[in-house]
Amino acid sequence: MLFNPTGFTECLREWEDLEKNHQQMQDTHRSYKQKLEEVAKLQDSCSGAIARQRKKLKELTASLEECKENHPTPKLNPEDVDAIAEIEDSIKERADAFSEMEAFLPKKNGLYLTLVLGNVNVTLLNKQSKFAYKDEYEKFKLVLTVILFVFSFTCRFLFSYRALDALFNFLLVWYYCTLTIRESVLISNGSRIKGWWVFHHYVSTFQSGVMLTWPEGALYQMFRNQFLTNCLYQSFVQFLQYYYQSGCLYRLRALGEKHNMDVTVEGFQSWMWRGLTFLLPFLFFGHFWQLYNSITLFRMFQLPECKEWQVVMCCCSYVVLFMGNFFTTLGVVYQKYMNNQDKSKIL
Image (tube, rainbow, N blue to C red; front, side, top):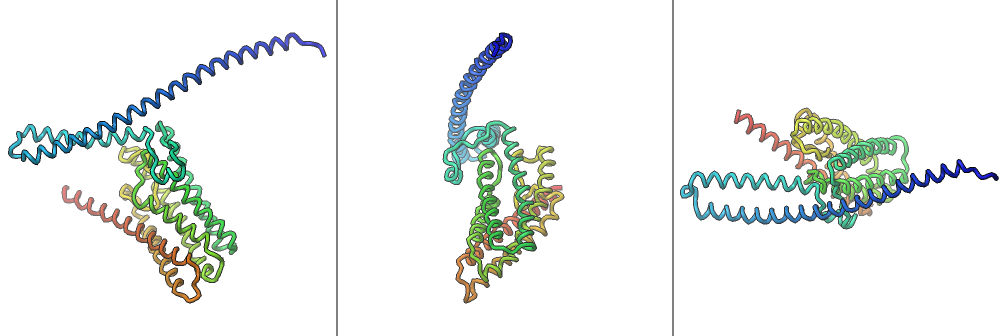
């Protein structure tokens, strides 16, 4: 085999280029690690400064309250009264500013995330990453809603196999478990999901797990079609909610009226009022269907042949879901009605 000097020269030239690129890559990586250390120090500094500011503001608020108690308004100069009111307003604004800052700072995970993930930092450090994660969460909900709709339709009308039902219930358990984890991450990154709409997914996870363990039998078959039809209806309503809530959120964000990390929920909130009140009949019908499920299960529990513990557990789960969904939705409607009444009085 003849030696090719031209080819060898090309190899040497390529190796020299690779050496230069490798050196540049090492320099870049070294700079990257230094920046990371600087970022970590800045994070600790900001977190400490916010904690100190909060402590000082708390003490200042207590001092101002003491001043107002010891020196009633008639004894204070009008300038002093205005100054105190201005300081109190600034303190409230400062608290909101701190919350905005902390959304971009690492913080301790809540109990649930600590149990699931440990002390892993789940805070996303820039807006693009936060929005990307939120959008991915919304797409995940949409895709799974469609899959669950098709799956429940298949189990209800096409195939009646216990193994297929078990697979469907396992998918429900996985879906709701995943939602609870993702929502906890979103909350850590500034999303304002709270109240019943968070706890609702924990109850749904438990209820789906109970259905998964329900053995084949006469009582299971007695409730099966009602359960699958309810799941089919829930998937349909959730699809409607996603479609209209996402459009409403987009308009409100464009107008600057909503937080950029707000997400769609499986219920009704005050910001959905405009153009989305048509969802209320669908929601209330679904809530009362859950009550109907609990009544059906309670009657099954009273049968002499009822031996499965899953009957009473599913009954309790549906009662909790009905009460939480119904009264939370009713509270939002009542609050919005009262706000509209107050506005009309002002006008």
